[in-house]
Length: 366
Image (cartoon, rainbow, N blue to C red; front, side, top):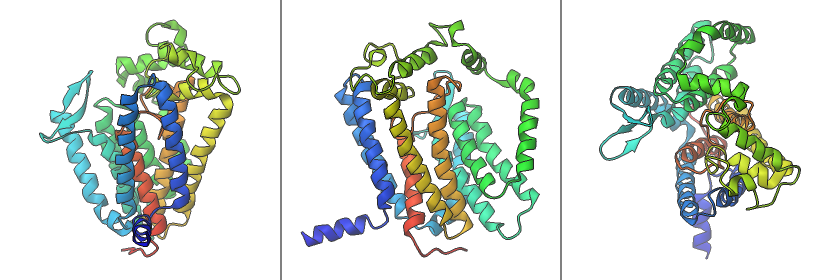
């Protein structure tokens, strides 16, 4: 008994117990909601439980990698991701009008997921090297390092993933001290460039923005998702209709209810009270991540941990905004809750990095 206890203690010595507990509680809620959202499908439930186990395994692996080792692989990982993205651009498999996957023979991978971790690691490494004497040119170089992968992902096209990669990199620039005046200037320039950017969007992307402004113009087509999701959220009221009793989801009015629109299922069945509790869990996760970032031993750890935490916020904000009709539909899952393994593994790798930064006290800063 003592040996088993020591084994578990050894395996879990690099877990942040508080963060792990909140994550496990959130994943438990996810399985409860998924059972309803999937039409009580045991196949999807068992598949998602396997996804969770794989994701927890990835979390454990990265929690046990010291931050100085992560720092050393930041540049090779970024370069590998760029090579794979270029490979997707040149040779990627086309599915449903998008070129996002690369067939390596032994496996079929989506390199854009790798860049959600590789980009903030690369930029955190870059700013850590220049922490003593940052110049404006350093921010320009960092912006180029960010723009290259974002541009390749936009070309696939994959707007949702490009937003998340762009956000993860922007947060590193912001936390590294990017000037507020410069950010305001970029925002003004972006607003001025909107008429030109509008014509650069794909037809379906322009359609999504038009539908955001008025989903009733195509209630049975492009606006259907938004209309049904807002109906589901509104019908949940204060306390919800109860587990398995959501009419929009159970009667198949709500599309993609187990993936991108699972928040509508949750809101209909558990109401405003349930939504607020879920928001509280997300806020605690983000808050814990920011505490870890604030206590990081060097610039690399602080910037990387801060970016991971704030990118999680972006995941949640974009999905909830999309479901509630205040943002266009871009295909971003609800973090930790939506069905699927790829984004879950990526998120858990991020949380594993947070735990590594928190639990490895001795850090080689060079």
